[in-house]
Amino acid sequence: MSSNLVWLSIFVLSVFIGFEVVSKVSTTLHTPLMSGANAIHGIILVGAITVTDHADSNLQLGLGIAAVVLATINMVGGFVVTDRMLEMFKGKPRVKKDVDAVGGDSK
Image (tube, rainbow, N blue to C red; front, top):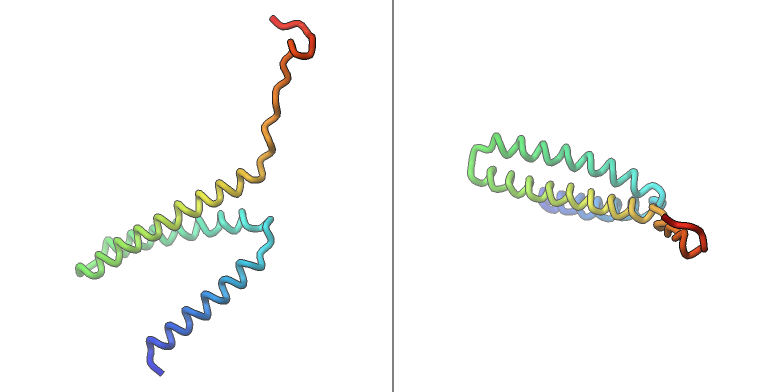
């Protein structure tokens, strides 16, 4: 069996397992999990920047820059999704009653 086929098999299996694990998480746990994932993405971004800084060839530099860009997109997207999820849990704004409409005095 070739090495590439083994890596491809591991990748495909990990995608299926990851999908099954994430789909079984209850909705109340998604926000804390997204916050933890955002922290991990921040660490990945710092690692990508560090590796890119120590690049010796143009190929390494190009791959490092691509890693920095993708990690940044992933991290920012995670914060946007977390913000949207937190907005869902906020209550509706209360309407302030006008004193004149009720018949009271207003100044």
